[in-house]
Image (cartoon, rainbow, N blue to C red):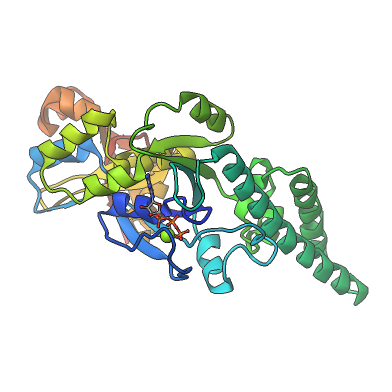
Length: 356
Ligand SMILES: Nc1nc2c(ncn2[C@@H]2O[C@H](COP(=O)(O)OP(=O)(O)OP(=O)(O)O)[C@@H](O)[C@H]2O)c(=O)[nH]1
Ligand SMILES: [Mg+2]
């Protein structure tokens, strides 16, 4: 799962990136624009993995991960000339979800926060950027038609693009539109930004964190939104002592680490669930989509497992915890053999039987 942090310049993206990854990337109020994005892999915290580790005492523990990219800030008018430099645009178009960071702290340079204006500004730039891609492509298609290249595929693409154009012209993101398989095939290559799921991080100051329910409710009408105290949480991420961290979190009313809040929200937004593989060698969490089958889960582990899939041996994490051991799970009849079509549930513990 790849997540991109975007937002207006100086909204605190890099600060939040540092909070999430315990990195020390440069944050600065006035620095010249730096183009290279910061990249990091973030482990998805999961208390269930900790319990499974206690039970199986494996040699190795592997958490599910999220790839996080912190992009340079968007400025007014950049949507028209390409929201990001072309070499960055490729990276942005590659992410599965956009996370928009909104400034909600006083800044020496920009003054008091204007979160409602800022989110609108970002919306405008994203819409513009997509609209320009779509219009350029429609021109190319028109030229192709003139040359007599009016094939079926182009017509399907044109129809889809017209629908998209209409939606964008009404200032609406296209992540609400649905496309059939053929249409999807033709438009996927354009990797439009407003087709991606979007969530919002309200980046509040330490003093007003937890006091923004009205604003958060408003934001939540449109986007999955969470609140961070970016700078404060970045400082927390640099501390070693767990008790001290907990104390500071309690102080301003942060219930969970920044990392856990972000990954939970991202799972929600993208419809991801976790399943586990366990054993003396390794306890590991994997992510797949809600509704994915046992074969999809097998494929997440290795394509060979999907190709040679026979059965999935399966029991649920909750059954294990309630019963106390794998043996007890079997005795209670809670150990199952599932076929290809089985829809994996969040918290399933799977072992794939396969044959190649
Ligand atoms: N008070 C306060 N200041 C913050 C917070 N988050 C970021 N800042 C400050 O805002 C300035 C910009 O922070 P960055 O994290 O570099 O912002 P950015 O969005 O990455 O900026 P660009 O990459 O240049 O677009 C720095 O001086 C930060 O210390 C916050 O939650 N509270
Ligand atoms: Mg930055």
